[in-house]
Length: 419
Picture (tube, rainbow, N blue to C red):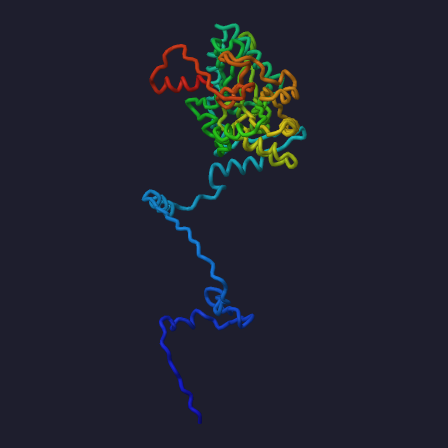
């Protein structure tokens, strides 16, 4: 019987070697390393052919972690995971828009109001009485100014003739008071009618209290202005009556009724607003969400138009351009075509190149001289700044008729007066 000599060699770590390696081996050539399977994956072990050694290069990197950074990471670890989108107010708004908004055969959109909870029959109790009192006050104010009354009647007549409001066929559930903002010192022929959806009676909440505001879709104004200064040839244009080109679904119009009559001698008539109303807190989201839908559905062959609508639009102002004349004219033409398909018109064109303006009717251009202008030709407002297309520069128009009041309210008033 032959004897086998057993030699035992102790090696540091050898006691766990058999745990790591599972015994599988793959070899291609004796001159090359063999592949051994392990719990960490495949490991290459073996000789490597001697070659000319290359000098090693290293790039030391030093990273200093601040205490503030460590604390911020610590709190982030402790924070719970974000709730699913469908559990948030923003997610519910988006879900409601996607489920209920429709595209009419004419291309226009008809959208819903996103209520936080379904309103009951008496949710808006007292809103009609409040609207009547507010309208009485409005009529007394109009009676003291024939010019203001004429402008107000003209505005409401236009609202009716365009189909943006019509005589109500069913009782309203919420009545929106309205009034005029009139500054004859600035422009005696211009008024702005404000629909106050935040009006709250003593017996019920306002419409805005019961609606979601929707997620923020607006691009940062500084980013838009910065990108606007990049192309060589640029233009600005305005989406004409943007909110009023978007319809409200008929079943939601009972929540935006108003009272109106052109004369105190006429009967007070109940109207319903058929379109998105400026003054309702959900309106900005609806308008921008419609533009996003246009960009996704109608711009498959118009990538630059999609970019203009999603990245170069602030509310109803579009500021964009291109580096060549043919490209800026094509962008303008495609933008007009895509917006027209959705029932939206572009007005108040301004550009630093005459060709862009010549491509649209004279009535659609911004050509009125600005009162503050003393250097060259004409100017127009671009996102709160004054833009002079001829010289292609931005500036602030500041008029100090009197010494500013050095209070927070006075400074805010001064800032807003530059727009």
